[in-house]
Amino acid sequence: DSRHVSAAEQLAIFLYFVRQGGSQQQLMERFQRSADTISRCIHRISNMLVQNPFYSAHIQNPAKNTAQEIGSNPKLYPYFRHAVGTIDGSHIAAH
Image (cartoon, rainbow, N blue to C red; front, top):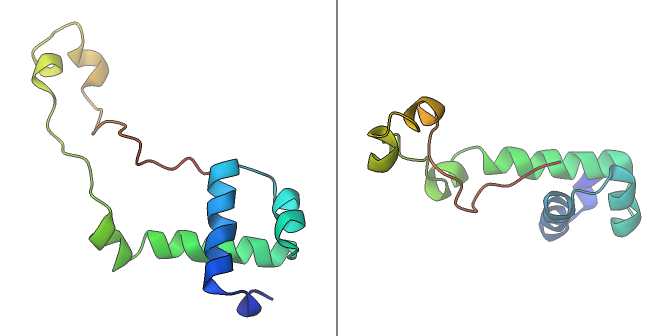
């Protein structure tokens, strides 16, 4: 039951999941928790990260302006016209 999992362990489960990209079975073995508990922990932390006050305090949306060298180049602009922001290493790949 995820009610008996500390906040620190829930965060550890989430971070291990997004860093390793492992299967639920691997997480169950690593943390010795049930599939239901693993799932609840990942969803609980994920939901917390995208809601206020955490999101508004720590997440900054990319600027909508296009870099001058792309916007003024007719060869590049069509490919980047709908791009928003750049990848700066702050994105998290969740598998």
